[in-house]
Length: 193
Image (cartoon, rainbow, N blue to C red; front, side):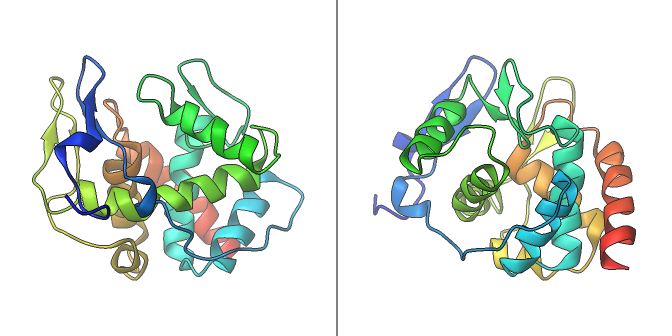
């Protein structure tokens, strides 16, 4: 398969489900952002909006980060950081290597955001338009309709964007989408004004 296409070689199983790891060629930068602010929330808002994400997409990312880590960039036992890079899938090790290559501490907020941005395009290619994955508990991951990260960014529906981000990027077996949406709403109200 071409380097930018999904292939079976890029999938592996952790005992519960199959995961996809995009080839390095798909982990491309989508732009650089400026991170300002004192709180983690302020830093996330400034960074993602300066990268070109809409206010609704930024709030959706933040609602998911709040659900995953309570916006604590150093939290983790089986997963690490704001977006809970999983140990079992190798994602955490990939993140640690990325942070080391940048000379940054693994708890650095901007480094975690940059790594997320490198993964998102490949995740949207891999986890949208290929059906829905249903966990044994009935929770669903993957999004049934194909879309790019850019198309997701333009949806202008913060609740829908929050759900899609969870099903495409986080893919939690206990997704708690309503909780994520409840977390995203104050960010949207406060920052988007």
